[in-house]
Image 1 (cartoon, rainbow, N blue to C red):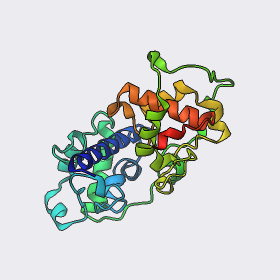
Image 2: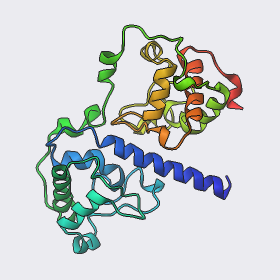
Image 3: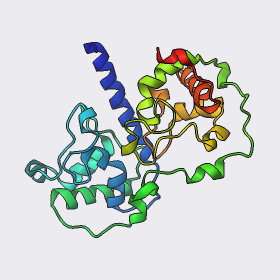
Length: 262
């Protein structure tokens, strides 16, 4: 890969991480405790132990803060933590959460970080229903409820767009297959580490529900509380139309686009 290609890949990875974090910020109900807030919004970068070691570390331009270090104990006051959570930190992957979290939630998560990691104080076990299993990261319980009895599978793409399945296949294999799998079965190489699991496009529930319109908006808007980002931030409408068309033809109706792999 050329230096420019590597730089672009890094930029896209970082952008997707940011979007995934921003999407996750809308999950917990008001009044959630600091431990639940940290687990859902912060641990993906700073790690479950607050030491800056997580699955995202290698994708970030700067190493996340290790709250347990001697430097953090010396430099990080409760007020400084709250300010960074609220306003972010320019030049790093730390985004401003003020548009996603209430002042009270920022106060709660800052107090948790300061007490649990910076000062090393033991914390009472938080409510597990808020931070464990699929409830912590969303889930698919709402799918059955929200699925209409009938979906018009002949509907075209929105806004008059026409998708090119061959181009969409190239995009899919480069950007989507790591999670959703080359076969669309939700069993990509990253799927093991993701909760909830990536969408399985070839199962009956998906084939009954996802027409071109639904696929386009799923790609465009992402999915709250999952690692499915809003691709509208980094892709053109035509690219999203292309990949939606590819997924529809190849997985939903099962009409493989052989040339896509080439």
